[in-house]
Every structure is written in structure tokens, then in C-alpha cells.
Image (cartoon, rainbow, N blue to C red; front, top):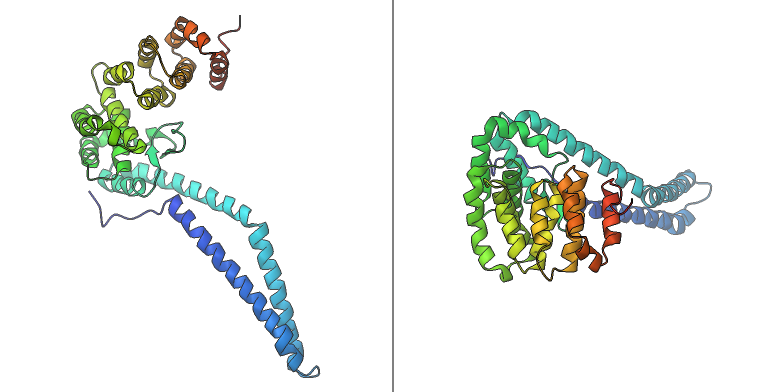
Length: 335
């Protein structure tokens, strides 16, 4: 798998980090132009005889410098936002074109393609995910369309499994391991189930010592492994029904908004049978059920109606209305 010899793609955060330096240099240059114009105007021009051949030349140079400074500041201050928008459009178009190119190249050289993806994923602070919507503040959507990888996995599954197994080793960047688990879960690569569970075991046993991002990564391992189980999501459902940790509950309840699989209707039903649930987690369950109902799972509506006394007691009817509207559904309270 390529490493040092792999071509490096500069990502958006890297490019954005260069913008302040570039703007600063331009502003310094404009200030320098003004200083030169002032020096010529105040100290050089008065010392040149009015009838001298150099007087008109110096006068024109001073005027040109003033005009250049005014135009420069006008451009930087007035058109900077437009330039930023154009740059962002260019970057978006470049990324789309790059992935289109990689799609054709992927089946032939999966190692090279995944080498580039690994390089991109490891160079950001945010966690890359394949799913929408990303979890607020800490995740970003890595590619616009997950199905980009379909042909690659179909043609070169053995190679992809080997590459992702390498990505899942502890010495790799957390973002790389997270992305590997995303791919393993989405394509249900059962060959990697034991690797994922093994990677999750030690940090799960030392849960209180983990950062929030590391906890999310471990939960993603469990999610991916549970996608590969014979009874899909069995492990994840068991964790949701038994854990006292509110963060874990809310993390799992966000999954149906990214991947609205029918199994979550039953999982959420059993979860809501628990006692003393955190209101924030119950609110997340409302949104999860809306996502499931919006994707045609009637069992989500059945679950909502079954647990309506709980939602009423927590005064969540407004949340239910908002969630249903978000997914283009008619409010369940309308006759």
C-alpha cells in the first residue's frame, strides 16, 4: 500500500490555512505602495524643478501609485468575499472531479486509491464520515455519495478487506480507523467483524479514560461489527438497552438518521421500555423514529403510538411535530 510515494492531495483545511497569509501579504504590499507614493509626493516632487523634464514623470508616478493603492484596497475589501466564494466553488468542483477520476481508476489500483483517501482523512481534526447528516461539530461528510465505492468493493473485495484491516490497526490515525469502520459497516464486510470487536474491547473496558472523539470511534466499531452480525444490530441494540451512559444512548439513537434500517424500529421500541430515560435521549428517539417513518418503515409509527404516554409525560409533542415535518410527514396528531 503506498505511503511515502503516494501523491498528496491538499485538502480544504490546508488551503484555507494559506488564505490569511496571502491576504496579509497583499495588504502589506498596498501599504508599501502608499508609503512610496507619500515619500515621492512630500519629499521628492518638491525638490524637482517644475520645469524639469522629470517633474511630470514623478507627478504621474505619484498619481499612479495612489490610484493603484485605492484600487487595491477596494478589491481586497470589497471583492474579497466574492473571491472566497469562487475559490470554494472551485475546490468543490475539484473534489467532485477528483472522485470521478478515482472512480474509474479504483477497480484497477485499489491500493493507490485508498492511499490517497487515507492521506486526506488523516490531515483533518474533524472525523470523516460517509453518512448524512454528520454529527454536529465533530464530523464532516467525507464523500457526497457513498455508492462511489460500490464498484471498488464488488471488483476488489479481497484487496479492500486487506487494506481496511491494515487501517484498523491501533497505530493508524483515529480518523483513518473511523473511516475504515464506516466502510466495513456500510458494505457489511463480515471478514472484519472480529477485528472491529477486538479493537473496541480495551477502550470499552476503560471508557471513563477516553475523550469524546475516541468514544465515538469505539462506538463506530461496535456499530460496524453489529452490521456484520447474522442478526443485524444485535450488539448495538444490547448496548442501547443496557448502558447507563447517556452519551452512548444518544450516539446510538442518532444512527437511524444516517442509516434508517428497519431493525431500529424494534431496537428503539425495546429501549423505550426502560425506566428513567434521559429526556435528551428520548428526544433523539423521536427524531430516529421520524427518520425511520420517513423511509417507509411503518413499524416506526407503531412504536411511536405505543410509547405516546411517555412522550406526553415529557411534553415532547412539539418535538414529534417538528421531526415529522422535517421528514416530509404529516403530523401523527392530525385526524
